[in-house]
Image (cartoon, rainbow, N blue to C red; front, side):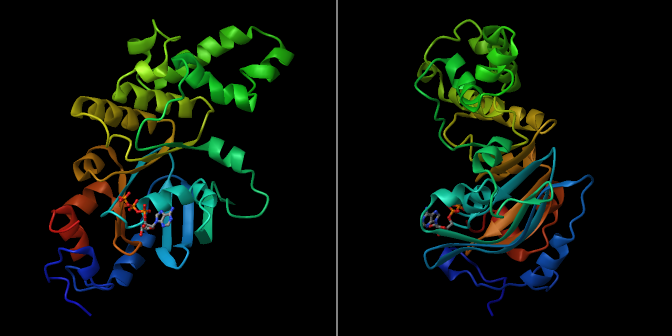
Length: 303
Ligand SMILES: Nc1ncnc2c1ncn2[C@@H]1O[C@H](COP(=O)(O)OP(=O)(O)OP(=O)(O)O)[C@@H](O)[C@H]1O
């Protein structure tokens, strides 16, 4: 077993087991965070979650509860499995042919990996925003209205028409509500019919968040949503994420530790090899990490 105090610079030089500042093993630390207590119910409970891509074992025995209406940051060096874990939460890994998932993920106490789960419904409840803004090459308005129209939600589309009422008016309301929710309304309210590709990168990303809000999700997964943005656009996204957590459960992957420290309520630290090494209140993780490797990672000694 390697000593945790050795200098680790390359990922493949890192030991698979390590001791903490208190001389405990990673397993003992993990025993501690499994019992991490938070107020309110868990939105997600993952238990013994493992993911393989072919023979590559990308996530190992992940057990974690994620509280609702809060921001949970997933941090860790490149390739440690953050995006893989995020994709487990709305079964996006199902779309990757080589991926195999074992273990359990419950959403509000219901197993999402059981047979018969409606994946369209699951992904409506658990929306996702990607690293690079990817608006449709359509108008700003149509970007928002597309999902609800497609799903035939009660406030728009066919159902609304059958039920009566002014479809157009409902759609206007929905577009405004989502753009306000994504802090974009003031900037685009006079050009809703312009092509979304004419917006700046930061505006496009907020439009993608507005689009995610339009199908009325409960959870928003974000995979490095600000990594392609300048500091001002990044700060708008950060403010927005904090606001969104009042109504939604947000799980965000970020490489930016200051960002995780600024915006998240709890932080999960993954380390190379796909292990979740520490999980707890963000302040505690950044001020008093239990594991030496986590401390080394957050103080920039490796990663
Ligand atoms: N579609 C895929 N096919 C095969 N292997 C994959 C796939 N996606 C991820 N992997 C592998 O799984 C491991 C974890 O990757 P993942 O993208 O989840 O890590 P990450 O922590 O999000 O990395 P980064 O911070 O660089 O985005 C890596 O070894 C990666 O090569």
